[in-house]
Amino acid sequence: MPAGVKKADLPSKTCVACLRPFVWRKKWERDWATVKYCSERCRRSRGNAR
Image (tube, rainbow, N blue to C red; front, side):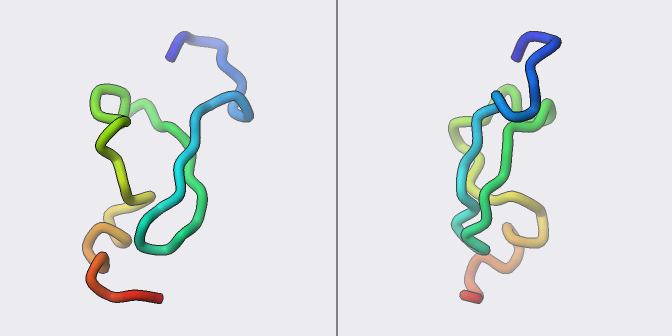
């Protein structure tokens, strides 16, 4: 992502664990295509449905 991009213009996805939308983060820059969970907590609880 180039600098100066508005937060509203960032790509977003839906978390497969909690079904909430989340937006792109700098730390996911290299592997955004494989990101499925919005947080470490959702990743750990992936077997438990809401």
